[in-house]
Structures are given as C-alpha cells and as structure tokens.
Amino acid sequence: MNAAERRTQITQLLSEADKPVSATVLAAHCGVSRQIIVGDIALLRAGGLAILATPRGYILENASAVPAHAERRVVCCHEESRLLEELYTVVDLGGALIDVTVEHSVYGEIRAPLHIFSRYDADAFYQKIQNPGARPLCDLTGGIHLHTLRAADETTLDRVVRGLKERGFLLSKDN
Image (tube, rainbow, N blue to C red; front, side):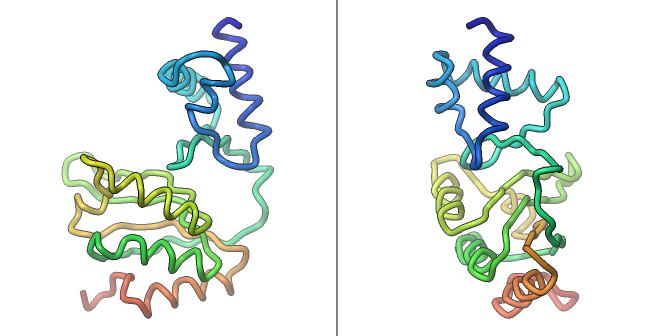
C-alpha cells in the first residue's frame, strides 16, 4: 500500500472506530512503524481532518455524530497527589473531562485533549503521568487549570460541578 492509500485506510479505521485507536494499532494494521503513522496523522490534520490525540489513541472528531450534551468550563486547583481523585469525581458523577487548559506565561493558553469518560480512561491517563519525565500541565501553573466538562444534560453537569466544589477542587474567589 502506498502512502495515499495508507492515509485513506487510517481515515476509514478512525471513522469506523467507536473508541480511540492507538498509533501502534494503526501501524500494525498498515504494516508500517508507529512513527510513520504519527507523520500520517500530522499530514491528515494539515489537510483539514479533525483528528484528536487522546491518552488512549486517536479519534476522529465528527460533530454530526456527537449526541446532544451539556458542556461547561471550570477552573480547578489542586496538588498533583489529588489528580486521580479529581478525575474519578467527574466520571463517577456522570461527567467527562474533554480537555485541560493552562495559562502559560510565555506560550499563553495551552490546551490538551483528555477525553476521559470512565475510570478506565482516568487510570490510563494517570499511568502515563507516572512515567519518568511526564508531568501534568497544571504543574506549570501551581495546580491551576481549566477543564471542559461534558455530561448528558445540565442536571448531571450541575451534580459534577457540585461534587468538584464539595471536594475542594474548584478555584474560588477566596483561594
């Protein structure tokens, strides 16, 4: 298969997937190295394809396939030791963490997709953070960061935000 056929195959695999697909899985399917896939993904993105990289792999963002939901951005602040507790709080109360954003003094806003919908996703993300040299973005800002939260409806989203507030994760005007 040539490069154009491979990128077409990658696009098809991502569009048919119901969960993130890792570069390693794509590489095995296409018979190339993981690094070739990373390059292909970059070229597909440059061509306008909305591919998100999550801790568990790539997903094709397709607005027409996304069910109705409620979203809200919240400002959080906590020590790294409470990272997993924050993630579990959101998913256990019915929400999802779509992304994380920090305000960097040199680079400005830095946003990274998370797509954490379950404890399984939270555990996978947390495992990656435990690797030597890996640090959560909030380390750059003394623990302060924003999350885009998503839930099926506003009632569920309110419950998630209340849970974060009760556990001391939300940054308040008093902090």
